[in-house]
Image (cartoon, rainbow, N blue to C red):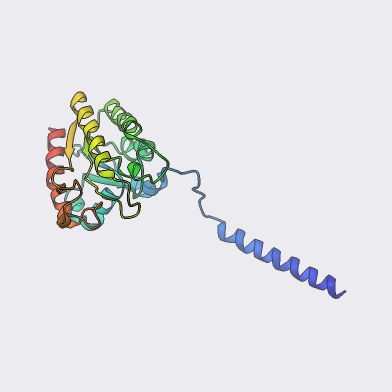
Length: 238
């Protein structure tokens, strides 16, 4: 009888525990299949109204460099309400491609700034080369052109070393990628936004006074980016 009582008590405890765990998951969305993090901007996108008659929306599509921009320099996007920041930290170029319809085309963008490649080079996910990155950049640019969206391609900021993955020697890889981006932009009459040159030091890393960690700009860096970005946008939309 004592053993039976212990068994019943144990089964009851397991049942209560299982119910509690199930109750905790009720109402929570399962996003394991959302590799590109499409839900990241879903709520923000839904709040957007259709653009005004004279509004020319510009989407900033990239990873942490764009996402941090609105955190360190929010006034830039407040003053330019037609600029939509759609950066997601850590993303690689195929994730940007998957997000392109939701976070660019469906937002009625007139222009898109594509900043891609550094996380691919850093090996955040898998092993890639310049050709892989360019395939994704080309696909995004072709989608934009198909939907009459002006394309602004970025020469990536220099990186001498990644603090979280030291020893990859990314400087030459970024230079090689930028060479391909410049050639592709010229051949297709896209605007080139050169973020590399104003940041580069003698090692082809970032100038110490413009960066937080050798990869991400500080506010002084973003102020430089803002000036040349505005010029590129004006050129694209003229």
